[in-house]
Image 1 (cartoon, rainbow over the protein chains, first blue to last red):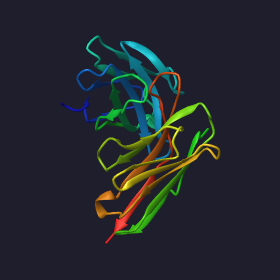
Image 2 (image 1 turned 45 degrees about the horizontal axis):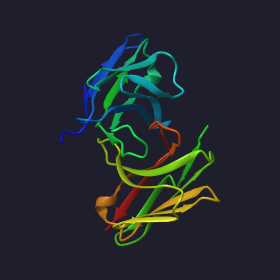
Image 3 (image 1 turned 45 degrees about the vertical axis):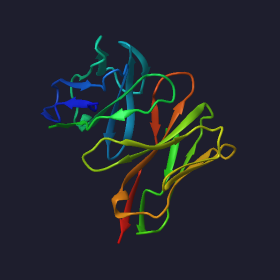
Amino acid sequence: KAGVTQTPRYLIKTRGQQVTLSCSPISGHRSVSWYQQTPGQGLQFLFEYFSETQRNKGNFPGRFSGRQFSNSRSEMNVSTLELGDSALYLCASSPGTAYNEQFFGPGTRLTVL
Amino acid sequence: QQQVKQSPQSLIVQKGGISIINCAYENTAFDYFPWYQQFPGKGPALLIAIRPDVSEKKEGRFTISFNKSAKQFSLHIMDSQPGDSATYFCAAVMGGGGNKLTFGTGTQLKVEL
């Protein structure tokens, strides 16, 4: 089984721009979650989508949004980028029921200049 | 607000020794506690997980000890090997649906020869 794939792997943007990150979950998985990882704040939950519906949301501003498609692929969008948005953005997929293992992708490294 | 506290921040252990990482949580609604291992350039990977109805779980060289009354849990790595050198994160998931992981701050483990 192929693992979780994230594209692009690296991205450089400037302040004020917007960015879209993509995540393809493991085949058959219906839940996709997004996390932001930074040296200062560690791993922080952004949101989770299950069967195209947002099931959980973290404490991030509205500039961070996401969606999930009928094939379970997910995209995350960040608008009006700020320097502090520079981070590794990780996507995790799971079957979606309780206590299932979440499988993480390699992440997208976003640098905001 | 840090809901899962993790210590130590870094740890150096000799090959063959025991590595111990501790975590504490505040919210009693958490009912699933996984540990993740992350190597540089990779996403976190599930190592071992426990639910509060058991006090200990062992998988190979890795053991989780769980103290529900103290709201603490710990990871023990027996016979630590250089290949175990990585960053370890404890996490907690709230019961009631959803896969939102609340992570600890991480422990950088280095196993020396």
